[in-house]
Length: 80
Image (cartoon, rainbow, N blue to C red; front, top):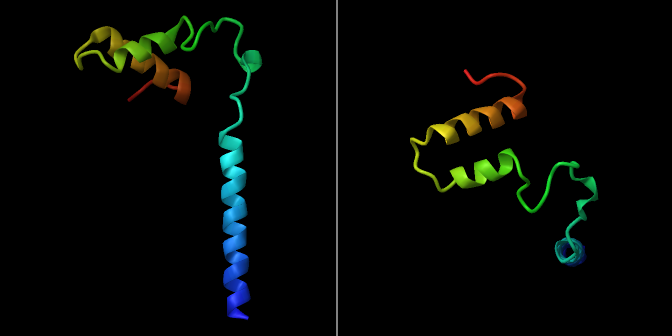
């Protein structure tokens, strides 16, 4: 009984891993679901500014404003 339980569990784990590996190798979704104003990989708006801010110095005021605006858009309220 326990031997069949171990084999069954192993089989389920291997099948699950195969399904996940198959999904990871699929092509990424097309740009059909993207907003009309977004162009390129990062878009032309705040995404590009936030990407620049990832490597900018910590005291950059433009980056602080960009991160505050992103938090406000995400959370729907001003940061406290």
